Image 1 (cartoon, rainbow, N blue to C red):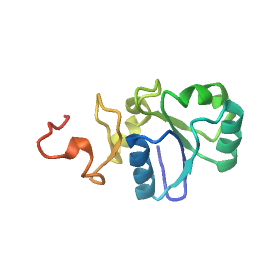
Image 2: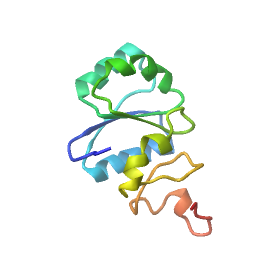
Image 3: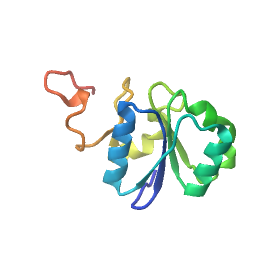
Image 4: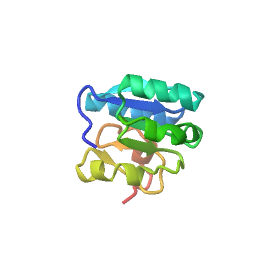
Length: 132
């Protein structure tokens, strides 16, 4: 995805574990988080996404329906990353980043884990079976 220092990443997520992980991964990349309420309607979301110059948007099943109708009117958004069962899947959206070793995708799980950055995540605790 080519995320670099200063790039803006919109988080259109409620308070959930994936939101915390996305914040931490964004900061580790040197990017800037643009937190947006999942309660924003399409018009409010469109204005904020275009005004913030966000390149990537994280959505969940609650916020995705508000992004879908305006996706074409937000040319700056190059990738949409879905969490927690959103139709935009992590595997599809982050395939290139995983090949580059930037992130670790865990099939069958909802959380994104920055490689080596989040040793205390549930999947990394001792006694838990690690995904392949």
